[in-house]
Image: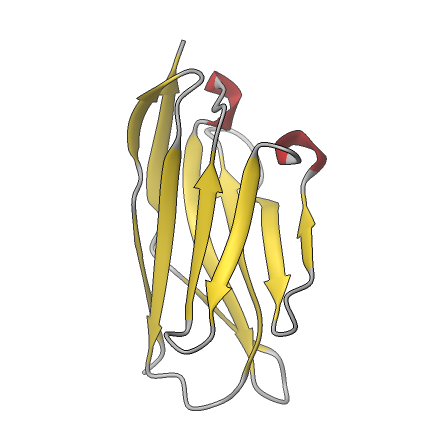
Length: 117
């Protein structure tokens, strides 16, 4: 069974930093993309950042220059370094992996990030 386990969320003041981690297990197929989405109260889930197996990245405009996504292929893990956090970054952050020939998807359980002003 494929599982994603996130960690690193918490409460931080505006301007602070957090680092999210996501470790996968049970994956026996190649991982295509790994990424982070977030969902704020009353809003739709949105893409924050994504990284391909080759290392190409894309970011939401709202986080460019502040967030950095990286991955460790040997550990099937993905990370999100979040700097200069703003109150509007407050959300539940979800790890996402697409894998295999059919690009199947799996989601983590989410980790809450709260940024106080």
